[in-house]
Length: 283
Image 1 (cartoon, rainbow, N blue to C red):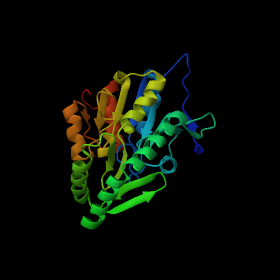
Image 2: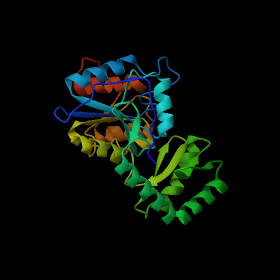
Image 3: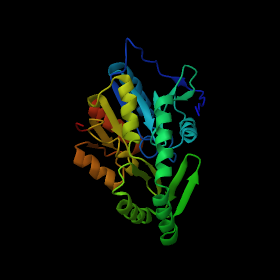
């Protein structure tokens, strides 16, 4: 099913066939771009930089999140974005773009392939998932979550409990190539290994004719590591509030570890990448 939502904000000037984008910028939402406890939730300087990079670098930008489409749209509205992103990747895998009426419209071919792959995955491995669910419910205080489109997910009571659960899961799915999971703190969802933040971002870039050398990605949590991969995005970063595992990943990959937190960290990383005069190191 194709879903679209309308926002009452303005879009940036659109690119054309004659003048396509050169750069693709991909931002995780919660903890990387947006802090709902801050005022404003996103640094105004971030939006200024996106506008500047639109002109100077021909950069398009998007949000790459584990949120659902509706939850992402609500977050954009709550944060009072002055204009729309060029694309959304939601649930870590589905692609949406705004049409000329500022309504979010799904990428039919990609999203359908993603849906079919996941339906087959959950049918094929229902016994394995049932075994993992039985263990989780008997050995931990975590809750097994089931909702439309997400028949297999876990909500742990603490991050350390999720660490314990992940150790068990890893031993049981190691030999199954197509099944993996996306973790964000105490939350986990099972998914197909071919569909994640990295491959969805890569598909957006492919359709725009943008190679990995012109892709920038920044994130703060476990589910961001798939897009924080220099085979997919040669410019990668994390904000100073990223979890320890992501910081280590960024350092190992030779990416940029910002000192500033959340959107200020994104601003710092873009300063470093595009030499925009900020207080930062090379990326």
